[in-house]
Image (tube, rainbow, N blue to C red; front, side):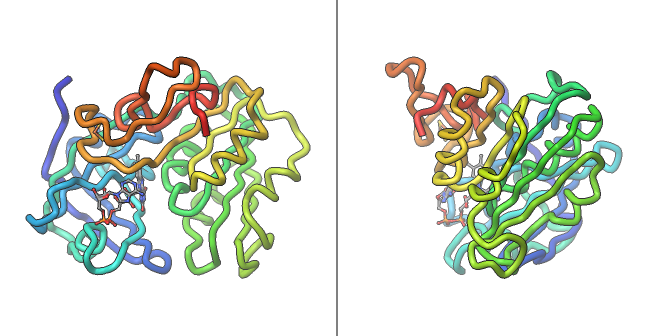
Amino acid sequence: MSQLQEMMTVVSQREVAYNIFEMVLKGTLVDEMDLPGQFLHLAVSNGAMLLRRPISISSWDKRAKTCTILYRIGDETTGTYELSKLEPGAKVDIMGPLGNGFPVAEVTSTDKILIIGGGIGVPPLYELAKQLEKTGCQMTILLGFASENVKILENEFFNLKNVTLKIATDDGSYGTKGHVGMLMNEIDFEADALYTCGAPAMLKAVAKKYDQLERLYISMESRMACGIGACYACVEHDKEDESHALKVCEDGPVFLGKQLSL
Ligand SMILES: Cc1cc2nc3c(=O)[nH]c(=O)nc-3n(C[C@H](O)[C@H](O)[C@H](O)COP(=O)(O)OP(=O)(O)OC[C@H]3O[C@@H](n4cnc5c(N)ncnc54)[C@H](O)[C@@H]3O)c2cc1C
Ligand code: FES
């Protein structure tokens, strides 16, 4: 399969929470963005860093040909730190959109949808919720963060229609004190579909509680190298066929819950 690649232009960049940056990018790759949950593979301009960084698309605006990513930076030796230094007008070598995203076409207005996100796994869930809003379904969105200073996208989710939004922080500095699994355990309705992205422990808890749910969609953020299915750096076991390796970059990052052994 031929890969799409473009030198996209940085429109804006700002720190939206502690060490978390929002970058808006412009280019024709936005025309190809289809399913929420797909990701971009960004080259770091520092030539010493050969591997691209996979970052989820948080939202897009087809008319303006822009898309937004939110990413957490590491220390000054990391590629994400380099990316955070880019100024408006800079060009970034980007491949994408890559991977299989969250299915949304099957959702109807009568569906009760549960969305569970944790930390830096929250960004792709925003475009998902924007797409689901158009269906008229009811969404309950549970978000967990380590602390208030790393809370992201609250207003954006809050401003969508038909959304009940609950937030937990590990240290109790905002919302309910504790992890997002506590919010999940308070839910008193049967979800028709559940979409989730976040830390492995959170995904495991969600997968365990909802293992009988057919429409359970889990986005995995495994370590990657090529990002296009060529190197096997990102494999997960296929629960339905032990002899088969699932490549997160190509077969995912979104999988049906029943496919994964978490
Ligand atoms: C599908 C997908 C979507 C993601 N979406 C987001 C997002 O929206 N926002 C965000 O902040 N992070 C996201 N991540 C995680 C992000 O890719 C890593 O945090 C980032 O690559 C780390 O790079 P670095 O330059 O900070 O660290 P470095 O230590 O410089 O990275 C070294 C190498 O390891 C890889 N690597 C290190 N940690 C990870 C990781 N957790 N996942 C994948 N590769 C890693 C890097 O890509 C790079 O190749 C996503 C990961 C995947 C797989
Ligand atoms: S990152 Fe190379 S196969 Fe997935």
